[in-house]
Amino acid sequence: MYIGKNYRTSLIKHLIIIILALYLFPPAITKIELSIGNGTEYTYYGIVPAKLYRYNLTDGHDPNSGWQLQSSANTSLLAVLASSDGTNVKVYDLTQGTMETITLNSLERYCTLLANGTFFKVVSDKIVSVLLLDYQSVPLMPPPSNITGPLPRTFYTDVNGLYVGKEFVFMASQYVTDLDYAILAIEKSTVTITRDDNERIQLSIDANSYKTLTLSPFRNYRITSTGNIMIQSGGASIPGYGGDCHCFAVPAVEGGFVGTFFLTRSATTWDRIMDFGYRASAIEDTKVKVYDLDTKQLLIELEVKGGNGVGFKPKAEAIAVQSDKPISLSLVHNGTIEQTHPLAGGNPKAGEYSGYGEGIMFIGVRPNEVTYIYLPVNAHNIAYFFASEDTLVTIDDEITQTLGDEDYYQFTIPGTHKIVSDNNIIIQITHWNGNPENQGIRFTGTIIPCVQTVNVNPTVTITPVEGGFPITYVIIGVAAAVVAVIIVVIVMKKR
Image (cartoon, rainbow, N blue to C red; front, side, top):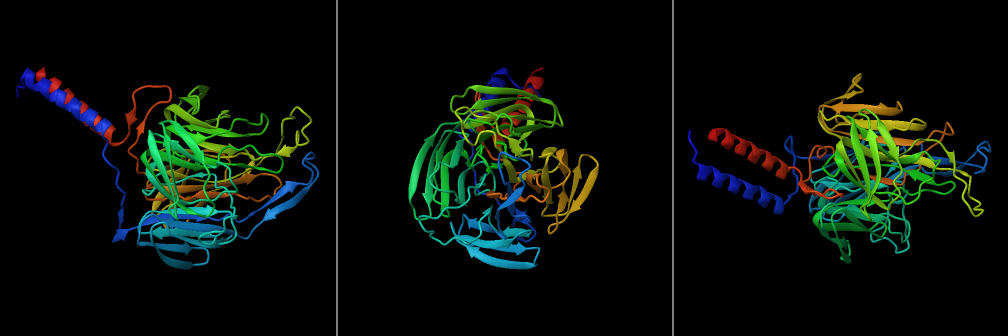
């Protein structure tokens, strides 16, 4: 078949126009619905820590002074919040064999207390926000104005069950009036924060920038944005004596927990001795760059070997992490209490043994995608594996385990581990200090992701921090690939 020169030129021009139109006007995102069996179901799993207590050194300057009980609790709060009217929810206590059925309207929530060690499951017919909180009572609605709660160290999921999006609903919790919540903008955004009593504020945020804010404890919020954003509470705070080093996993901007672009809060000061910081784990050899989101300056350059991880301590309020090849990123403490670096000026806290590392972090693993997880080598660790359907999981190419929808697999070997699964799975990593041997955990709080949305990508435009042509992931990438193939075919026809 012969194609005339003018026709070929015209067709190529039209295809280029299509690419530009898709880039400038990406398709709108609609809520995700997954048909499972005879209906739509979304599933969330978790296990409440069995040892909900913490021992501190009797004398912070003497590691041999013995241990005293600092705090303890017997329950944790589970909060489920709906984004849509008529959301049907079932909350299963799989340890006790009980179930609660609830119907929620938009911005309504259900709260219940779960005993230590409880294995639970939440099933809903629409995507919900599920928060596990180290809090021992069910908050009133509306709550008293002077109430405070623990600050979750976590990222929040949107109304599609993804960590990147344009609409989020969740219950807030924080201590007093600190700027503990951050909105991290991937795209230039106008963001509207609406409380359950219709009190609202609006923010404008540039791409690769962020703003912090205070939210009222135990109030329900809806946050909408004109561009894609991420929402995070807490960061890499450095504690004084007796304080916690709170740990969390960082979702990839492209979707899931394995990617090449990440945004997160950080810290402007780090203790030089304390084994606490960010860790990048790579599937294959890669270069990693870390940028300050305030100044856009390059802070750190790293090389990470495949199958290993590298730690780093970026001094900034918030950072962007870019890599050549896919990595996973988390904030971790290695599990030992270290003597803090002596400070100038006669500070009485200088030189104390500090840093009680703890965390409950949830990581999603996609079908047949290699994911590396890290269990701190000097800590108590438990990694729980969950699946909503029959699933085969392989660990380090050696250990295989079959999961069902109402059981879990428990893994405790420290170090870096390669995970592969044939279906979506969620891993809950619970870790806490290795000393004393009977040490427990006080964990603050974490959002629990939905199993069914683990392998769903957002449609998002990423602009490299150091400059360059923006990249629109998912739809635009596929369209460009198709157009490229068509152009190649045309050129071949010409020949």
